[in-house]
Image (cartoon, rainbow, N blue to C red; front, top):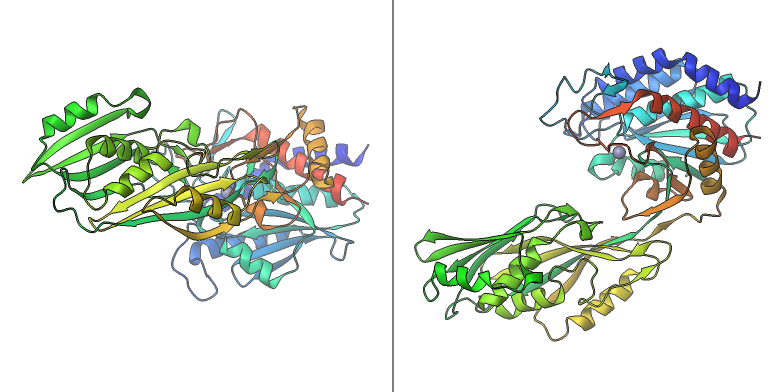
Length: 472
Ligand SMILES: [Zn+2]
């Protein structure tokens, strides 16, 4: 019998036990809370960490609690190199719409339901049992294998930053917190604030008193509105003018509502989408700006409104802002206007830009400055992160894809995404599972679940991956 056959047999024999472990971990509502002594992200994430480490210890692994921020579980300490497996024990709030108690794991029609079953307690349990199977199958190891369990991935990953500051960084590895086959490239990200100041709206044909859209920059906002004055142009006249907007500038829907007292509200409806996939949405801020431009709205803010309509509009690729680019590895740059605020004096728009290897932050800021030269728009960089790239020739990418194909029988290929997984915080680390192509991604949704057979398959994939990459 080969090691991998032995591994598969062991994992199959532990199905009930794995289910019990997952049930225990899911039962803890480990949403971030108020910091307490020894519990930097609140008592529940800390409780989840304690339980996971005591379960691992019960299996005979060496464990460490790193100041309540994170913990690790080690197999074969003192190996040549360290293979890291990164997972997290915190969750997003359960929210409404659940059929059953989200913290009482239950199985129905081959699916295991519960908050965290897919993101990311389930993958953490699968990784732990994979390590156990490797050990009990007697696989000889060259490298150390370290399962690193964070407790704050959903609110900024301060857990992993603390871990990196206190503990040696693994040499290579994977994080089962996204999709199969494997994500080896995550675009860089930059947050840019576009600003403008109105000298006042007095004397304008249609004064603009306020504008608003968006709550989070990583979303293409589906609605945006402006509050305007109706002293000189009636609501009906505005509706008339907006009815013959050119087709490409036409919102999905636009509403002008008389608020009384000489004010009206203009609301543009686009299509909401994730900021990394702007082509799937229609940016309501761009639509609103084009509508206001068409109306000739704004006093002191009018040149800024026109500039935003012209330089950003409903483009998602940064073309008119001067930053459009793409490359074969990563695909195109994406540029999303995520937030709009205007209080009658100061206008602020926050951009979420994801960039490929072909450019960088300094280049983009320079290009945008040139494109916006003759506009009243100011540019401020709020911060950025570089492209996370693990070469398709790296042994991690090659080895994991081979294992994935061997165990699942599915086509294996690396993919690039807009960015933001746990794996980008560690070198030579890729995102690997546990959502299979075609699976319903129920992360952060009501009735989150994992398909149980696929979950068991993932445990086998992880174990074979350890054997392939860390084996002697
Ligand atoms: Zn996650």
